[in-house]
Image (cartoon, rainbow, N blue to C red; front, top):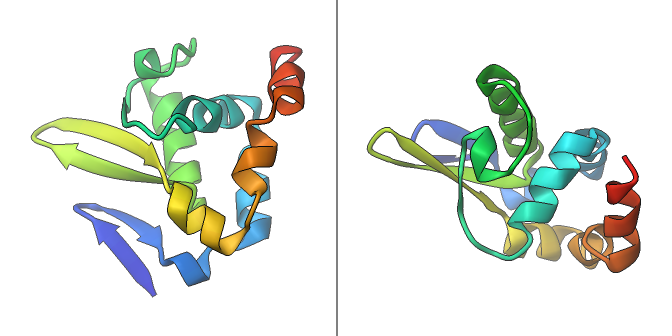
Length: 113
């Protein structure tokens, strides 16, 4: 079953698959996006919202991959998109995963990429 946040479908919590999550997180840019969202807030969907040197189309692709894997949700306010991490859904599905991804060791490893 699929939930929808306006025009952007996301998998229901019970449909989030670990293989899809790990595949989405295999890209360093997407891992940086998740790390940026770990504070629990919403961010602008643009590359400048995440301080990444990416083209708009590339950023859109990365956000789509994260959303379809069940990691994020996208909210529309007028013509502005905001992105948030699905912290509660991910924690209920895979306890400890987000803590491991945002641990000091993981973040230090991310800095090397």
